Length: 345
Ligand code: CP3
Image 1 (cartoon, rainbow, N blue to C red):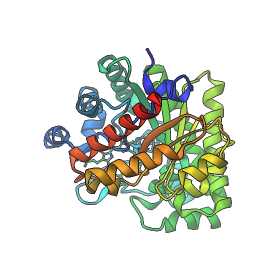
Image 2 (image 1 turned 60 degrees about the vertical axis):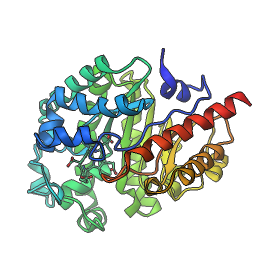
Image 3 (image 1 turned 60 degrees about the horizontal axis):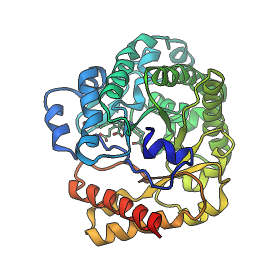
C-alpha cells in the first residue's frame, strides 16, 4: 500500500494528503524533551535520535508523510565548512565564503553525511507502511547564501553583491553545492526516501531573471541528473514567493510546486500545467486563531483546487515553536473532513 501522499501525486486517488513544514520541532513537548539532552547537530547526526524525532509527529497526528529530521545546511559540511547552531542566533558559518581563495579551499568530504542515510533506513523501518518518507536538501542558491553570508541575513547583501559583481565566482560556489546535493539526494533515495523536496527558501530576494538563472536552472540540473541516475521518486520544489515565481519551475522537471501563503491557489490552479502538482498554502500564523477560522481557511484552500492535478495540503512556510498543538490537529481534521465531504458527494 502506497498511502495518500504518494497516490495523490500519481493521481490514483482523491483524498487530500496532509503534512506540515517543520512538523518535527520545538512546538512538540516530546521534541523539547530530547532537545534538552543534545545540541541540534548532535540530534541530526545520531541516527536513533533523528529517526525518533522524524517519527514523533507521525505518532501524534498520523500525517500522510514524514520528513527526514535534518537540515539544509549539512551539505556545506560535506564541502568541509565548519557549522554551528547557536541558541537565539541560528546557523553560523564562522568562515564564510567571500573570495576566490575561500572557494578554492572547499573540499569534498561527503562521508560526513553517512549517518543521515542510516537515519533514513531506520525511519523507513519504523514508519507505518502508508506513511511516505520525504528526503530533502537545500537548493544551491539558498545553501550558497548561508555559506556566503556566514549565517542568516535580512537582505543577502554579500550573496547578491557576489552574484552581480563576481558572477563566475558565485557560479563556482553554486556548482560546488550542486555536486554534493545531487549525490546527497541520490543516496537518500537509495537508503529508502520515497519522495524528495528541494528547498530554495530565499529566492524571495531575487528578481525574475536571477531566479531563473541561479535557482530554477540549478533545480533543473538536479532533477535532470537524478532522473538520469534512475531516481524516479516524486520531487517537490519549495521556496518563498513561489506564488510569483512558480512559472519558472514548471519546466524544471519537478512534480510538485509548493506555494507560499501570498498566492491565490484558485488562480494558480487555473494557470499551471495540470500535470504539475501543487502543495500549500496555509499561512502558519492562522494556527494562532480559533478552530472555526482555521477550518474555514483550510476548506477555502482545498476548494481552490478545481482541476484534477495532484494536491498536497501544507503550510506556506514552517510551524513556529509556540504554535498550539491543538490547532495543528484542527487543521488536519479540517483537511480530512473536506476530503470526506467531497468524496461522498
Ligand atoms: O520537520 C521538518 O521540517 C524537518 C526538518 C527540517 C529542519 N530544517 C529542522 C530544523 C527542515 C526541512 C529544515 C529546512 C531548513 N533549514 C530550511 C528551509 C526551509 C525553511 O525553513 O525555509 C532552512 C532555511 C534551514 C536553516 C535553518 N535551520 C535555520 C535558519 C535555523 C534556525 C531557525 C530556527 O527555526 O531555529 C535552523 C534550525 C532548525 N532546523 C531547527 C529545526 C527543528 C530548530 C533547531 C532547534 O531545536 O533549536
